[in-house]
Image (cartoon, rainbow, N blue to C red; front, side):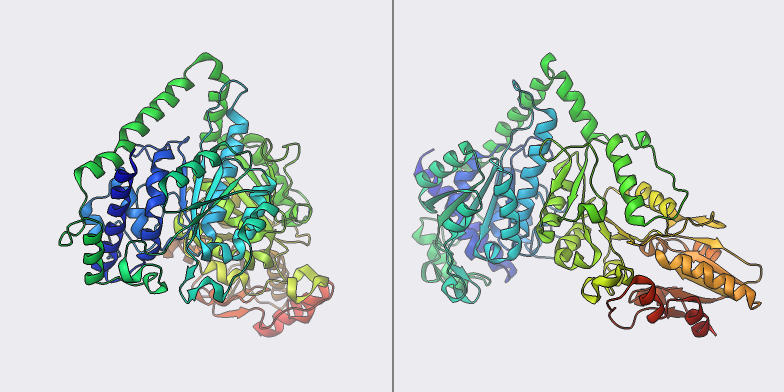
Length: 639
């Protein structure tokens, strides 16, 4: 393709992006205009099929700077992913297909909701890792069914966020040669020049992390093309430092931080169009020859996918096809669920459960942030990534969760991540994106309360249950024994569009009696009951056993009481009133007991016995006594 044609295509993207922001009177024109030349050349290198955006072996492209939606939506319109000019004109408007930041599942073609800066880099690493794992399962020495690339466009802000360092370190360590990160180095942030806040040598940073680093003029088509060609042949992940000018082609605002997050203005846009040889009076305009060039992606991509599908039908690939089929269609009926007949920590029962799942489901994969011996998440005899299913994420909670988010959207994988519950603080943004995007990501969090003991208040989660229960479309399970733990996993495996968290104890918990009414799979059930009960005690996790002991003490005092176990508060409050009233009797005094903040319990309870402070350093038994979680203390409070 001639560079003259490339220039016209790039300018078309620039002015579509500028027109979108101007029409909305809101948005970010600078990055899309600066990246337009790179986007045109990247279009020539990508293998994707707009007719089937979910083709497994497609190249993935992740826009880590989600604010650059003028570029993203322009490309998806031009490539033929179903957006129309009217959608571009409705940019950032209510119910449009073109919201302010790209959202997975909302706009066709968007691979993942990147959210806060830096997330997209970790997401791209996740897609690349998922591809490597899938390839290791289904490729052979003579045929590669999975061999695509992952591209990520990022800016200065993405690389300043700490998550990018974590993720890129993992990528270099695992030699992800299918990953290409294009760094839009325009040296501008919202406050001004990057000289105000950053001075590190990006080349040395990435080389020290095991990356190949290339550099090009981000407005020179031949240099961009050469860099991408080299990157695809590299044996390491590649960073392309593309030196660009923010708002390229925007006249007086070219290179200015004022072009980052505000409309350019009608006069600036008209002059820019005239200078580029475009009609300044036309908005949202795409010439026929430009459209034809971009829309080649439709037929080219469809042909590539059909060739890929045809190659799968050859005899030598039969075994690989069977492996791919098993990965993409898990049969949960094959799981041999363990049974538990003695007191045990739920971190231990959870470890036995996930190993049972892994033995039956080949797509079940994951790891811990350097805590697998404590989290009990080692998948025994399952090998190490990329050929095996144990991933060593290192002490990188935030990148781990964002990587697993992408693995959950890759197609055909059921991934989990794990750490101590208190360290979920490090990955909250990724957990929120998982809930927002509807990603089936299994979070395993152990050491769930002041029961952590001697490690003290820095390691004892107090507010964490409440904050995650407050998160929409996020299901927090805090099982009180192994049987509840099994039920939690059975439900979570079927929840295809929601993340689930398993919050597990360090200390041993007794085996519970059978339910009197209801079932754990509905989030809560009546565990023990008395005729004419005047009090209902509610709890989750380790406090359920305490509630049973309080009931016994109340009975000795002539007071009848019920006990309700609530392994999943989020699921229980979704049940209809009739079910809730059948287990939490409306005519009883309702008391919730939880060794955490517990404020959400007021939705169901009259009184909440919970933590009003941080914990302390001492053996677990002493801490429960100190903070009022003993039978005598609770009887006193109830009285």
